[in-house]
Length: 266
Image 1: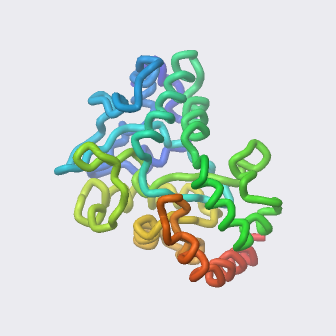
Image 2: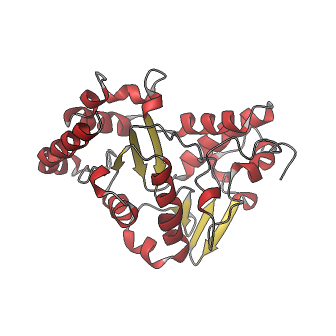
């Protein structure tokens, strides 16, 4: 462990370290990467962010890189799950964490900065908020809108992660989905069965919101309590041209799921 990380190893709840084994290494944690992050060039470009010193593992055409996304909010009431961080999200998170560590900030501060800088933003967040508000999530949480989950006022109620916690690239390009690749790739399956499963245990009282079919399939595979999962919500990306139709088809079921969860978790 580096001098920079020394003394911080037990200061954050790490979904990687506590799920390690087999193909998942306990060293894939910020405690082992803090010094490397602090030494990154301040003006590193997005095109150069997939560096060899951040490479975690490879299997066939699949490569996985480190990103400081281990922050866990165990008290969250809502857990939003995406597929995997893309290159742009990786770049934003690493730049933010690197800046904190270069200025002698703590590992906790670095994880928080990475999460804030790379969380849902723009049209995707707007679309997600509109759907969550319409099916009653804001009302259950006592908010006038779920948009506040990404503000200081209500961020303590929210957490977010990915099925594949670290960025996955296929032949150097962002992995955009398709459950078959996860099922046939031992490394990616290990992320689902070990890391995602562990993350769900670390946030036990959250309503789980998978974004998209591939994510829903992975969550269904690993979640011990399907009653806590909001199945049927379409991916909020603007690129999902069928989003509105899909939401209309599942709207009543989604409302019923939220109502059942709210009744048991007032």
